[in-house]
Length: 299
Image (tube, rainbow, N blue to C red):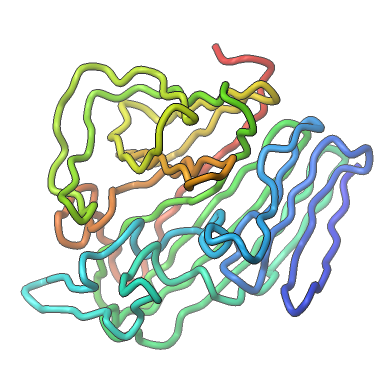
């Protein structure tokens, strides 16, 4: 049997999904973007809540919408019109990872069964943001079972016009030893300029498995399929996406036992480089799903 609990810690509102026998547990921060803060599957800790002092805390498991990664200098052109996001620049004078990280989601629905627990969170953007003058609704559905966490996202365009977008997910996974390795199929890498802004996608030989402790990573790849695998000495997981195309951003913080494995529909600066950029028509809905599954071993 599963349960759903709500807690309030220093003004932060959480919803917790958990099995009564302790096999699985998920903790979601409702009032700051609806991001997944903690995840255990089959009694294995996959994602651990970061301390508030950690620089990675702000974007941990954020749903990156309406763009994944950064927008170069906060400027882009859409339909022959210039847009300026300078009003939402962060402390690093950047615009990155979309607009949802500080949004307060409402609980729309919850469901408990013998084998799972789920909750639906919703946020409605009814105000025009300078530089992105479009209205939209975001619905997040988290479903937890013993071995799997599913996150399904629905985006509805509530504006009268079409808008551009990309979307991604930014979870940090634990890797406390030298054996953390990421496996995926790719023959295309994203080429960056000196400011780490993507320029193009270049074809290479097949990318080998990447040990995350051997180097500092801030790299992006175009995937050949929808599967990324991650194996440590403590656990192994499959990460799947329902979208196409898929891009993978790998990022390792300095002096930290973490790796961001970000599955996205486009690389950074897609509003400018147009790589993977999509468009959502008025009153239409876009859906995407991500799955984290704990496995005995990688096949």
